[in-house]
Image (cartoon, rainbow, N blue to C red; front, side, top):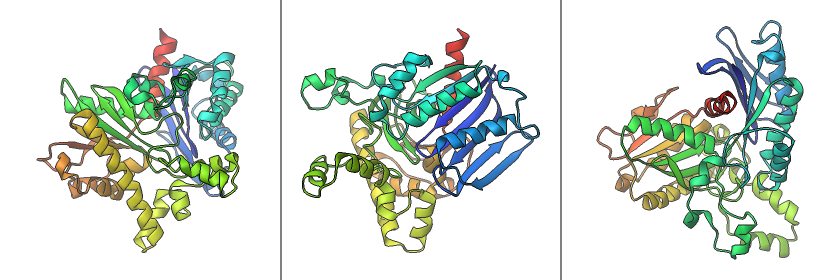
Length: 394
């Protein structure tokens, strides 16, 4: 069974075509920096590797490019769309409506649309991908896997906000995000630890960033909340901010609520601090002495360290911390800055191991460290394929 996975992020689309249940990857790729004139399109199979810089103005344009590659007479891996049995979609926000993987129908699409306000950078792109896939692959079953599902285990003490009960009844609560990634890498870590119990902190660092406290395989707290906008400093999102600032912007500085929303989710974070949203650009500028970029890196990693301390307290100790996703897997500098001066928690990094490139789980702590520091490449696409296959194969 061929399952095409579409993972639409805020500025990227990851994709894989996977044969299930063998988990054989037929092709994979990435469209990143979507919305820019120097977007990058990657496509690879056993026989072909393509990397092209071009303008990709929208997620729709990116999805059409990916479909063209899959069906290309010389480079493609399928001859017609009927060779795709299932299209699995990552959907960021499932609200209270979705606690598990779901077959997509009109009702599911409407519920995803109703959650736009809670995930404005993601759910619209997720639904766009679903509707385009329905057009391109009309005979395939469409399956949604929700980022929020993994976090349904968060207890009330962490899930509820200290506001009147009526708002909780109206769906105002912590939902949590990047659940597919946190689930995948935490299961890899648990297998590596080979213990009956486990206390893990999983740090997902990409354009969007989040951190999760995971006890015995279950999420018990998470940095993002009602929407994927708070917590850690992100590419263009501010992360945690005093809500009084919002009132100040509106009542004193004259911003509209729409402008404030745009400011906090699209013009803040590392972009607001430096003018760059891509960490590679920020690190390059910092190496040349750019003070704003140096400070932004310090602020970014300082925020992560605060959460590690908080979650160590909640978990009553740590067995392992995980770095994953684009930045977590590839930035030795960020990992080093996060782990510096955390010896009191038993976290000590081995510099040589930290600077080693790996496409599989890598232990980068010192040999005698009390806490395992793991770099684990996330594979949300495989996790989505596994969940989609279980759903349609039953």
